[in-house]
Each structure stands twice: as structure tokens, then as C-alpha cells.
Image (tube, rainbow, N blue to C red; front, top):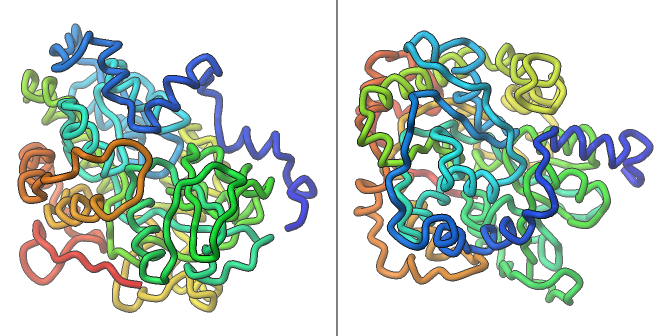
Length: 422
């Protein structure tokens, strides 16, 4: 597509991506600081330094913050289907936030007590910034991809040399998987000012909030982006994007976003926490079994949790297995072995995946101070970062979770070996 205005104006595309959360320009300095690794500075300004005091929760209302991506599905479905209410909980309508930095900021400030974060974010928050975040479950598996502009000649990961690629956050599964693939193809990940010359074997990375990626690609400001759905599907349909590779076809049934809470809250309110996790796990099972219905429900044509049209969200949820174009172009290579979906919903936080992420973070180029990773023991993180108690109790209540294709089979469903290959 040479001119995206012929099919969709940049203004309309930006509106479809961004929704109406109203992030104002006056907060840009704070958000840029967060994206660059400055959570500690922000927290110091909020609290006067570490450690943060316990956050007073004057009521038991569930307050959810989320990005407009399919990663948030269990949190949103639990609200839409009344699963929180079934547990006797009051839940406010979830609040849409445009980017990871403002969502982190709001969670730190106590505005939300239930959120989803990219899996590496809580590692960074807990061990770089001493914030008491806990991973409570996985929000979903797979559900992300790398798309390239049709204006480019990129045919594979080696073709990303000399190109500009956007990631949603430095501490993201997307950045980890992308750089794994780049290294395997002899390409170096670099972080340079836009416009600075690149060597043929350098791929320049920048952080963009997910809603800003399709408009940036359509305007040819970037050559590719890697992100969660539905922004890949939206890019394919509206922004001149071509699917290069699904991340779930590289790392089998990988986590992307995880459900997170403040440990101070979970410790103080164990019964409340269990009820919340019962609703979230129930919603995960429901989403796994009813992807097309859930896509319609979440879209702007349904209950409007996501600003994307139903056709886009349905594509993001369901278009995968057996799709000949994806097979012919190499966007899917390992489907026969992996047997996963474009996105799957399975809440159990496999310890082996957490360990792999911590190990890979040490090999991943990011902006900002990474000294906290030096000597960070992956086995310690596996047991310290994740709270397995509440999700396991909820899974016993909803055993249908084992029917999801992303659940380990052939033995203990709570244990697996990670498979990561091109």
C-alpha cells in the first residue's frame, strides 16, 4: 500500500488504535522517564524514597487498568460476563490506558489493584525498583507477532538489517524474542537516535506504545513492529502491514502479559485476592472456549473495551491454523509441532518460562540501567516473583483449563520444558 489515505486516513487509524483515554502532553516527561527505566525516580517523587508504604485500600472494589490489546482479555471478560460479581465483588469498568509507562505509573500510584503487564516488566519493577509487585497468573499465551511494512523488501529476520523496528517496551517478551531471532540471523540490535546511519547488520530499536505502531508504519516512520494483538491484525487490514512471523511460532506457547497485583494487598486481603483470581481464571477458560464470541464482545462493535472493530479482533483471535498465506510466506513454520493458536488463554504461570525470561533478559539490549540483572538468580526469581497459591486454587475450581492447547500434556500439567527455535 503506497498511500494509506486511500483506504484509511491517519487520523482515523490513530483513533481506531488509541481510543479515548486522554493521555495529555503534560505528562510526556514522566512517561519518557518511565520508558527509559526511571521508575525509581518516579516512585521517589511519589513516596519520598524506598520502600513504598503500604497502600491503603479503603474498600474492596476491583479497579482494573489495561492496554487496548487482547492480552487483557481475562480481566475484561471477567467484568463483561459478571464473574467478579459472581464472586461477590464490586468491580469498576476497566480503565483503558494507551501505553505501558502510564499503566505502570498508575499501578505504582495505587490507582489500580489489578493489571496486566508484559512478563519482564514485573521483573524490572521488583528487582530494579523494589516495588512489591507479584505475578498472579498468565493473562494469555502467544498472541503477538512481527509485522513489516509492505513498502519494505523485508523477507526474513536477516532483512531487518539497516531497518527501524518498534517494540512496545524495553522490558518485553517482544524485545526478547525479536533479539533472539536477530542474533540467530547475524543482526545486531542497536538503540540509536532516529536518522543516525545504520550499518547493514544493525537493526535500530525504539519504543512505541502499541496504539502508535500502525500509524507509524503507515506513515513509513518505521519499517516493522512487534507487538500484541489486535495491532498486528489492524496493521494487516488498515496500515499496509505484512505478517513476517508469529512469536508463538518461535517460542511455543510463550507468556506475553501476566496478571499482576501489589503484594501488600494480596497479603492483607487473601480472601479478596482468591475471589479475584477465581474470576480471572474462569474468564480465561471462557475465552479459550469461545474466542469468536469474546472477540465480538470486546470489540468496539460489542461492549467497546477495545477500540478496534469486531473484524479486526476476530482476525487477531482466530485467523491462524491452516491459513495458507501465513504458511506460504513463512509466518508459520512450526504449527505441525507446536499445535497452538494465534492467541490462547491459559493462566498457569509455568516456572520454566519465568526462568527463561530472566536468563534472556541478560542477553537483551535495552535502554537504561541494567545492573540489577547482574547476579539476579533465575531460580530465586521463579519462587519470589510469582504467587502460585491463588491461581492454583482457582484452577482446581475450573479444571477445564487443561483443555487449552497451550497446556502441557503427557504428565504433570503444571510443569513443562520451554521450546524456543526459528
